[in-house]
Image 1 (cartoon, rainbow, N blue to C red):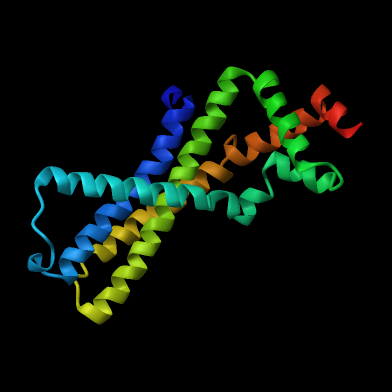
Image 2 (cartoon, rainbow, N blue to C red; image 1 turned 45 degrees about the vertical axis):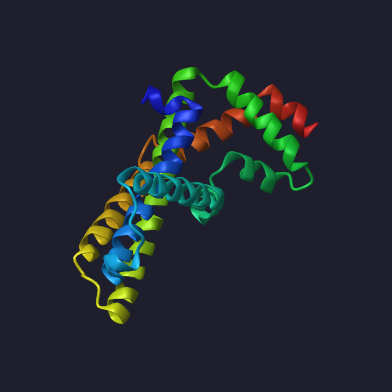
Length: 199
């Protein structure tokens, strides 16, 4: 899991996986709705470039939305949100600075590696779940209006089920993300950073 601990690697994976999925799905869907004559003739290289740009654009868009952090069960477990709830008078920027100063300096490297790796997998899983659910809904709508092939139904449903179950398992299983967040929150409350923040 060490490769997931590198910040650029983590961000690239979180961006590219759902982005590539959505770009390839929409490309396939457009070929089912329209005929090849509806599209200009493109070289293979240019076609790959277009798909790569769409993958990156879709991935960045999904990354910016940050679906995982909008989920209620995630928001309630984030240490910084719990601190803010306990101390609504404290400045949010100062809370983040204090907590992540503690995280970088007081949490052991193996524990940070585990935390970063699991949260990366969780982000990817939730984002791919969202894309697969979106793809399933769009496929159903297009099948109704355009009679596209329904062979993708099971693919999107299976991917949604696999990634959502896996993501929830990563979050709620023993010694996984929820427990890790709680342990780090409890450790932060005993830290010098918290004492300075709360004083």
